[in-house]
Length: 56
Image (cartoon, rainbow, N blue to C red; front, side, top):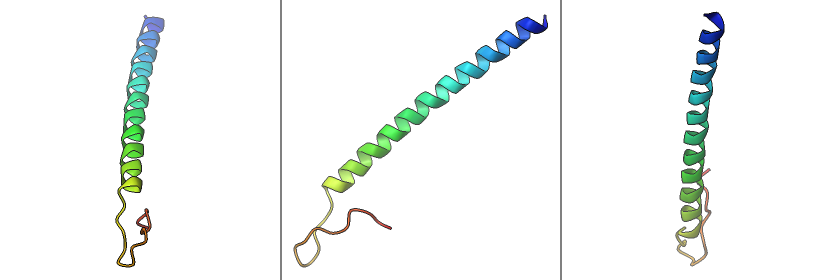
């Protein structure tokens, strides 16, 4: 009985870990796309030069 519970627990942990890793992958992909769009669409300053592409 204990080995069966351990196998089920391992399956649940691995399933959850796989879901979290996939979610982090999609979040990272969205951040990269937003960063690239911000980099490409940055505004110009009053002097006509391109401003900083970062906010910090």
